[in-house]
Image (cartoon, rainbow, N blue to C red; front, side):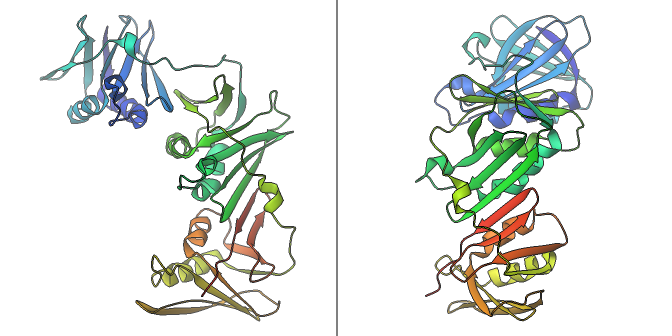
Amino acid sequence: MRIAIPQPQLLKILQTVERAVNDRSTLPILTNVLLETTEHELILTATDLDVGIRCRFPLMPPVEPGAVTLPARKLTTVIRELPGEAVILEAKKNHTATVSCGTSNFRIPGLPAEDFPTLPLPQQEAGLALPQATLKQMITLTAHAMSMEETRFILNGALLTTRGGRLTMVATDGRRLAVAHAPLGGAAKSPFEVVIPSKTIRELSRLLPGDDPDDVVVAPLKDNQLTVRFGAVTVVTRLIEGQFPPYEKVIPPPSKTCFSCSRQALTDATRRANLMTTATSQAVVFELGPNRLIVSKESAELGSAREELSVVYNGEPMTIAFNPEFWLDVLKVVEGDEVSVEVAGPDRPAVIRQPAFTYLVLPMKVS
C-alpha cells in the first residue's frame, strides 16, 4: 500500500473519523484507525464498537491496494505537524507505515488490518433520504433535551421515527420534551422507529455540514444498528434497545393563555437570573401580570436578581418557577425574533408550539 495525498485533506478526514476512537478501550485495535486503499480511493475507518465512522477520499491512479491500522491520535498529531504538501504514506508487510512529507520522515508501527472490526453497510439503494440541513436542524432543536442520567437509559438518546410522510425526532429527560418534525415528500418505503444514542447524535451534529445540497440517507440495519450516509462520510451506530415513552400523551392541547416577547430579551433576563442559582436552589421565578413578565431569583447565599420585561399577556396574574437552563437551551436554538409561550397554570407545563417544533418544560416547586 502506497499513496500520495495532500496534507490538508488527509488531516481533515483523519479528524473526521478519529472521534469514534476509544482511547480507553481494553482492545488495542480500537485505538487505531483503519486505512484501506482500492484502485481509486482511500477509505479511513474508526470505531469503538458502538459508533463507527467511515470516510472516503478519491485518489488519482495508479493506487497500490492494501490496508493497515495505525494509532489514530498519534497519526493525526503527526499529520497535523507536517507542512501543507503531499504526504506519502506507505504500509509495509510488518504492519508498520512510513510517513514522508518534504524533508520529514516518520515510522509508525501498527496492527494487522484483519483484526479490525468490520462495519456493516446497507445496500446502496436502501434508506430514507432527506436534506442534510433538515436533519441537522432537527438535531439542533432536540439534542439539548436528551437525558444525561443513567437511571433511564432509553432517554440517553433521541427517538427518530417515520409516520406517513413525516419524520419526527424526539428527546426528553423527563422534565422537558423537544419534538421536531420534517416532511419527507412522500411516505417512507420502510417506516421505522429507532432510538439513537446521545453520543451519535452529538457526532452527527458536528459532522453534518448543513449547507450541503446533497441528501443524507438514513437506513436501519440488522442487529439493532443504523447507518447515516452523507457525502463521503458514513456513520454506523448501535441503537438503544427498549420502548421510548409515549411522548404524545404528555403534550397538552393548545392553550389560549400565553405570553409573547422578544426571544433575546427573555434569554438575557433568564441568563442574568441564572447567575444567582446554586446547585441546591435552581428555580427561577416567572411572574406574569398585565403585559409584563418579572424574571427573578433570590438566594440566601448569593443575593437576588430581578428584571421586568415588556410582554403581550392579558391573562390572570400567575407565578411559575422553572429551571433556567431549560429555557436557555431552547431559546438559543428556536427560530424567530419573538417567542410565544403557552402557560396554562402554575403547576402545568409551559409549551412553545411552532409549526415544525414543540417544546414542553415542567415547572419546579419552590419551598
